[in-house]
Length: 212
Ligand code: MLT
Image 1 (cartoon, rainbow, N blue to C red):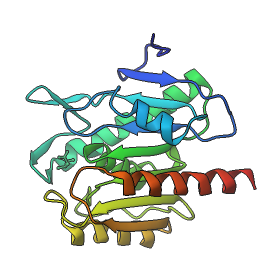
Image 2: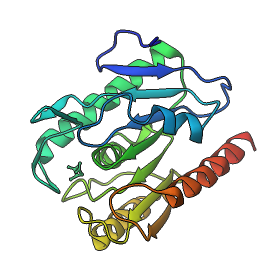
Image 3: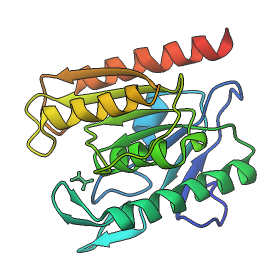
Image 4: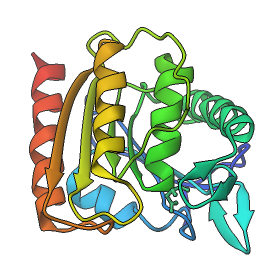
């Protein structure tokens, strides 16, 4: 049974059992939905609240978080609009469920909108795990991400995200002051055990830092 209230995005909400842990905002990839990352989120953060919206854009029936013109070529006007819309939803959900700012955990298209939200609405996220993300905006806006923790995991053999593009994103985030950990794993676009091990360790460090 879903605990989700009626808000501006179709979503799933699972309450946490430790209010001291930052909630995870789960953002699926192209063709996914609000159920996709729930079990991953629960295994990575057993006691955190999980908030998982469904992207509002449909590409031939596949949900996404923003429009693209081709693979890896984004409709930036739509991306900017959708990043704002998703940020508004996060604020709405924080009020409705009584949550602190979440850490985004996004895969592929979900990671790309999380990166755009960091750049356009930085206060909405406490941090982000960006899985197979690429540079979302051709001209990144000037933004202050001082101390914002970001884990970026890329695949060495990713056919969608060239390594240089992922490195450029890491550079943009660092330049804005974010505390970026970037690893290029021996992987493609899909996730593997090496991703999970890295995410678990990184989330554990965020919990320890929050408790200190
Ligand atoms: C995107 O459109 O966000 C990227 O090309 C990744 C994808 O969803 O395939």
